[in-house]
Image (cartoon, rainbow, N blue to C red; front, side, top):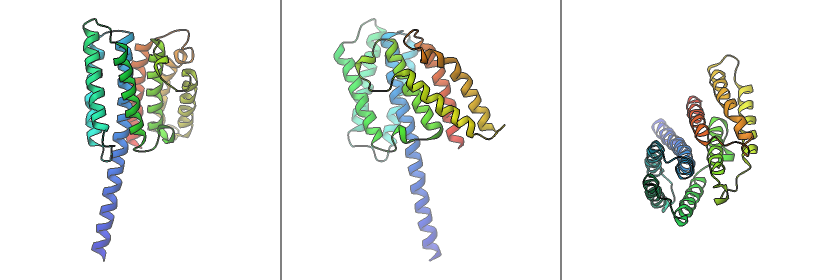
Length: 236
């Protein structure tokens, strides 16, 4: 009887561990999906910097590994990702050679990204259902991608997101709430205060997004903040 009980507990532990791993992979995949689109917008409309292409390629490789590892992914998801990756690589190469991608290729990138996002949302809690640092990290990544899209005039290509300043207010509200909930003088509070300082640096540009565009700066700071939020989530 005891042996059976320990066997059952072991099975439950494995299942919970698998669910947690799958949740972590899903979080990273959503970040990679939105981040890769932001990288594409930067290459397409801001600067054909080879460094942006390198970052994009690394993000695509990481995303494909994550999709491969997802235990319950939709049957066609890996194939869709591979098409997405191949198309973005092709467009990146075109841009590096001084060519302008055709509109059909750009439309295909957006459609494949939407499809992959929908597949991701079918695998677990939606971003709005998340809490804590994971929620903030995704919110900031989506916000950054929308901001870059707006800054190059690509927002009309397809986004039903909230206005950028409204997204920024939501992020500020969630970050402030987490700060108030953190124990005084704790490591968590220290980390959140460091995040808040970086956020305050870019918040004015987000709130006044229609007046001044600084997409490269926004990407750099948001990448740093997202990294710190990810570490914070891992410590929970």
